[in-house]
Image 1 (cartoon, one colour):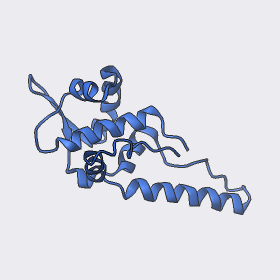
Image 2 (image 1 turned 90 degrees about the vertical axis):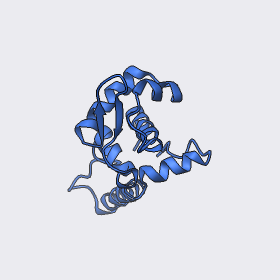
Image 3 (image 1 turned 45 degrees about the vertical axis):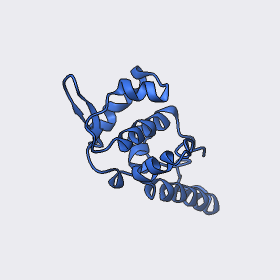
Image 4 (image 1 turned 45 degrees about the horizontal axis):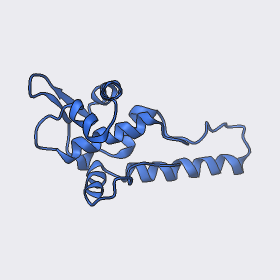
Length: 139
């Protein structure tokens, strides 16, 4: 299983919002500048996050985006599922030999456990300690 730039940049957006949680809306322009990412690409990623009610938008001169709930209540798994789809290394086939099927299920469950037990608060706090590559998953 490989997380694409959609998932990676989506986590970046959400971590940036988590770090500013409670301070009001943050513009995508400022996130793009801070992380040296394409603002246009971030605009494409924010729509599904908003549709999944993970973020909300605020219009106006001081508008932008903010988390719809506390960072402790949003997991990396929530974000990855919205942007990447179901978490699975392969599509498990019922007629596949049991040993291989069980291996795929174990891998899927292990990845889900890591993603679902890691909150945005965990990622934002870890990044604040200077470990900026922590949230980049290489699977």
